Length: 451
Image 1: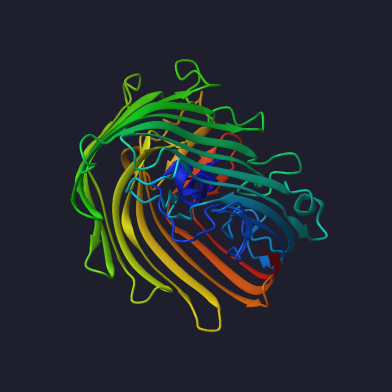
Image 2: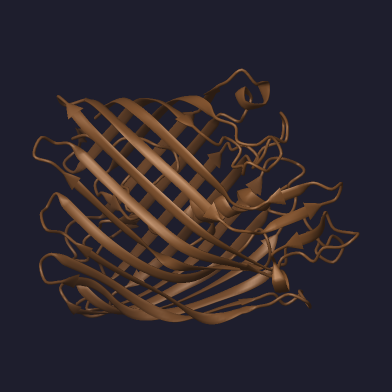
């Protein structure tokens, strides 16, 4: 069944299913280390290859609660990871750090491929045969940066191998292909104080398991933004985006478990930029609308959305941030979900070159428009879901430390906690009771050679 895992998918891969924004420079769901100094290619570009071996453990392989089928299952993990990146600009918070000023530059870019092969060390066959291979491709390209006309391309393409949210047997998985791309044009009339941008957005989510037919979707849309620069690195912004979600393999008129096609509108405005020498602020507020035209019984979303993020840079090697959000997203379980909460985080590079990073988040999530139970549906009944609404509290904690030795070798450790607290449960056809919520701890030791 898909109750618990959809919670993780909606949260764990932020840019795919929920609001984007991460502190880590890795920018991928596959763990790797920070880049080294790089291999110089030409006057500006650097090549960053690397290889890492991660050894650790997972206390809850199938995202279970103790009362779920099979209970908690733990296993050791061995995961080799390889990557190669090339670019003339860094990427931070999933944004290419391309200066707004015009210069002789004709192209700013950052391209990266990361692949990992995760093996669970366990005697049980159902754990040993969990999907292993994942690959992630990220591309950021700006043509004619800072000029009167600029073209921007962004691409995230991933293939993730994931187990089911409980022991469903060998051959059942949540392997998926996730593509998110945009192609846009930026126009800067006059001296560049005013900029106008427009972009086409295309996304695809496709599950490779044949029995998960209700999650495959194609998203097409557009986004536009007006930016007025009031200081060299500060602007007032107003943006609008539209997205149409079309579910590829499911007809909601025939199958009550299918998701509904929908349109989503978001408009936000506010301030984005630098405050003094050591602070940056993003403060955006607006209105969102998710319209499910074909769902006669389910709700639409029409409410406030917004983001406030304050970052402090006490030194060139330190960042501390706090962020508050209220956002909505089309949901794979129900019509939509709303996340309201916040994140805290910090990173620091010590004088002896040790890199440390820690981040935590707490979000209240509300799923609305759950599939209506009945004789024709796989879901027979819900527990603690009044009005077909599910409520969860999701807490995450992540920490990592990396110590370089010489130019190329790195030793490190990382830890991730994902906790979903809810009293929701669903009873499926055949009598299976699937309780929502889980607690998952994953820890690794890392040895890497990177450039």
